[in-house]
Image (cartoon, rainbow, N blue to C red; front, side, top):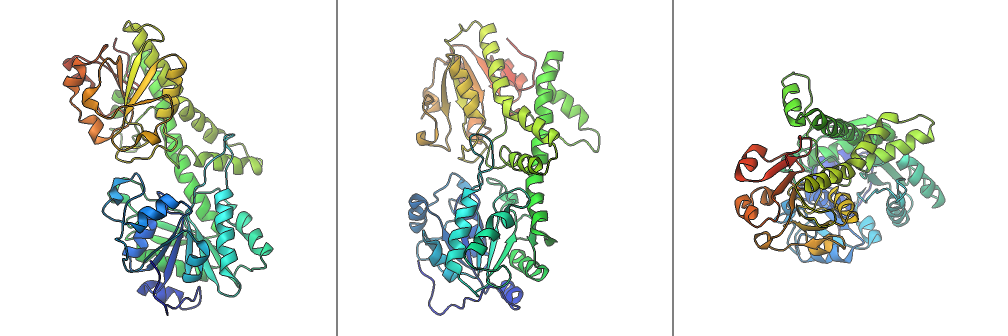
Amino acid sequence: MKQELGDKIMGWDASFASRADSGDLSVGIIGLGYVGLPTAIGFRDAGFNVWGVDVSERIVNALYEGRNPLGDPDLDDMIPAPGSERWNITRNTAEATAACDVLIVTVPTPVSDDLKPDLSYVESAGRAVFEAAGKGNRKVVILESTVYPGVTTSTWLPILAELGLVEGEDIEVAYCPERFNPGDPNHGVRQVARVIGCSDPEVGESLVHLYRRLTSEDVRYVGKVEVAEATKVIENVQRDINIALVNELAQIFPELDLDVEDVLSAAATKWNFHRYTPGIGVGGHCIPVDPYYMMQRAQEVGVPAELITAARAVNRMMPRHVAGVLRELMYQSGVAAGEGRVLFLGWSYKAGVGDARETPTEPLAMNLIESGISVSTWDPYLSSDDIPDGITVVDDIGNTDGYDMVVLATAHPECMEIDWAALLTRMRTPILYDGRRVLNLDEMQAMGWKANAVGSPPRY
């Protein structure tokens, strides 16, 4: 799918804001994953000519065919058909860079095995764009991947210098963090507020016009790149801290014969109490990862990030804690050590999305397996290729039998709405554990289940 010949490519100049207002820009999205693909679709829907770039042959081939290559079902009906106008897909970054005024980088920013930020994708994507951009074109390159303050300039500006390019003359660099929520139609790419950081206020203000055409919510220039970078990372740090608090309370209150949900619901009657719900752990590509970026930066400047570090430790260890609770529930119910069979309902980190990245279900399951417990899972959003070795994948929930415990690990609607009474008749031991606090435990108990949940006193 190629761009029409004769399209005018100008990069940044004084007319950029007016061209953005009218949609008279070509926008390239580098990285078509869970962030990049919805972003590319959003800019196309906003009227821009879009080029999407990804190194994955699988993703590019699926998009060539008009298929959704990701596990977010909300995108199923949004992928442009083959040959659609203003929709160009390629694996060639240079091709897209030559065709675009603006390049938006949405590549992964994971952590390494030793929990250090891995910026290799940001570096390689930036290098590929800058090499193709050349001198004097003033292409606008915006990083949207989550990083700690200072990454954009410390990673990209040395590459520019190495290539003989000058920011403000050959390339314009900015940062605008993505904020949308996969699987949430009310907080998609076109419904969330955006902030933009850029060293040149004139360029930054002109980018407000670009993003205002994309989203119906507030868009503002916030000054330095580092302000926008810090904004994104602390948003997820704050969520990690709040979730860590309720997860810690979920460990304390059962020892006091209190259900944490009863306590939280009572506390929420106060006008300024912020209600969070405990769970088996924190998953996904943001909350379990971003705090390590902030911790790394704090370490570099010699400031201890004690609260952030403690919260991350609580959430990281939550699957191990829950595994201990599950083992005790089976032991007290007469299941011999090493003979338990557990069925997980759901595997992905989030309800309604087929995304297994950083799912807390995996360390929970592995902890049980280390104790000799066999683990199976049923997740209607994932394929067997998404599930680690050692886990039995269930294709038909209606044919399961002989389990000692069912754990609701992901609150997929399909998992919550199974025939609980029928499943109960096929259990060897009728233990139920709600790892997401979405089931009515009293109703399940009345049905005949030994109904338990994260943060509840045990029912044997």
